[in-house]
Length: 311
Ligand code: C5P
Image (cartoon, rainbow, N blue to C red; front, side, top):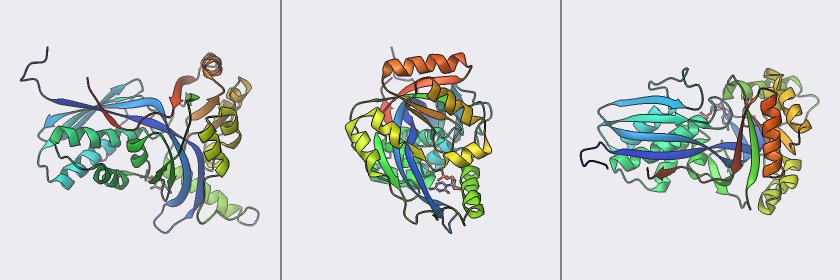
């Protein structure tokens, strides 16, 4: 039984993501790249519980090692809470308990999911009552992938990846994710791509000014056809990620030898996402990769974006 005096806790959840397609344009003056991506939210969630406090603090737990995470103002969840407080003119703070399941610096948008769920939880806790558009605007200020963690589903992202339009997707895709025991820095992987393009400017096509998502990707998503999608999975950040961490190539190969329709680096890596034909294929692949001592998690997509959970 909940006593009337029990402190109020608001629980919000947001999903991790896979970029099933990612084209990166040339480096812009602001240090970012225009991208064209197809995001899919997958069933691995970050759980954020927010309770009233005088200042801003965060604790981490969950199924992954969170010991190296910062808990000060540099943490994206704290940034999300302080941004919302400032926007709403709210003068108190919040304590956040975050249960993490999405790998840290893994290319699956775990920090972005923390930020999206924090916005939603604090909005409900404080009764700031911002509109969805206002919260999305704050999400955009926090990072390129935060708006997608907020909206979820399957969506096309342009600009920095933050300009979203929903994409039709039928059914559920079965994914098997191989987590690495190290993280990769997104700016470093983008920089490696730029360096590669500079080095090979004579013999590769220049990066598209305005990259676009291949129409076959949209068609495969609409059809809900994993075979079709496997043919067109693509990530421009894969080559630079493999250049920085060559051992990931063997992980991709191992999955493809064990029944994956295709494997690709998720976002800026190092997580490898494998698409399976169906649930049986995913289970078999999970067993084979686990036997090779990889940390493997199964997930389905698409799933919903950030939402409040009734405990
Ligand atoms: O937006 P976010 O803070 O997640 O971006 C982290 C870094 O990733 C940026 O500082 C930039 O180096 C790189 N990035 C990029 N182009 C994008 C998104 C991110 O170059 N569209």
